Image (cartoon, rainbow, N blue to C red; front, top):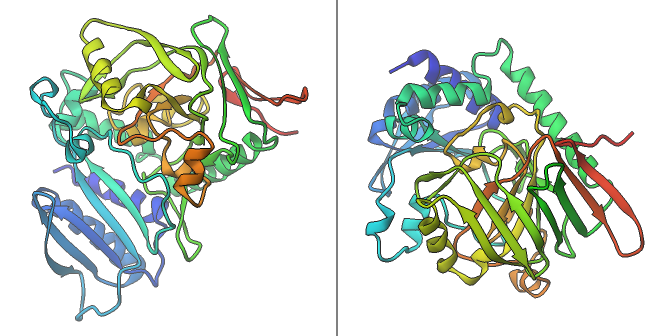
Length: 389
């Protein structure tokens, strides 16, 4: 075990994603293989909170007994923060699977969350753990060290003052979010200089750009995916017309797809181009649900962000930060502003049990918002979110 890596990874989670304080009590769910990492997290949490940590060992996803780590006495206070250590394993053979139920979609990282989610009572983070399988998805000759190097690059684990860096990243993300929402216009046009993307669509009537920084019921801000530098807004599913091409690799059913062009008409994908090996994967995804062929969401990200320097994470929650993306099937619940799912559906939200987020941004992309009265606002130009002077 590379203890130096895991200590810096744990410090990022505790200090930057959850920002634990002296009154917090941490709970960790993990499988046996990640127990040493869980102990490191508990050790660092002890230094911050002077409290022990609840530990629940999972077996095949089922809850087991709860124990306590680094506690000098029997703990009585309920947890105020939660970490799930997620084992990153290889993927099943999609060709051998006749049915794709929710657990299978979850394993493929394609399962949609409920469209409407209440604010959580406690802060939390999902933490993917490096593995040889993950490293091989990033690079066919890779191993656990490949995954660790990618995590270090993305999160800046080797930076001298990562806490200051991530505070500045959070502040910049909030600043960018204000700029994206300086004009709430509902028609959108995205295009690239090379003509590979030229797409028009409408956002949902009640919508604005939202980042993936979360807020608890008590008003605490935290980052469930450990980093949040992109901004999502849901799309009216019948509105997309034009075409869009991918600009970076992405994952579908555990396979890496490196090229895809989608053509939309009346909100639906009417044609697509990809390589021979990837076509059956896209056919399978589109056959899962009627709305999987619908544009559901736009996710905007700068081309000069921390994540844009990473070619491929093979982890959707991080890959979406590399560049601007579109989502098919269903928007992320973080971007939905409706209180009732029926209202969102009535006003045009796409709904599916599964979703797929694909990268389409580049330093040649421009995104323009407009309305029917001649008002217009460029929110992204040359791949960069425009500042409001």
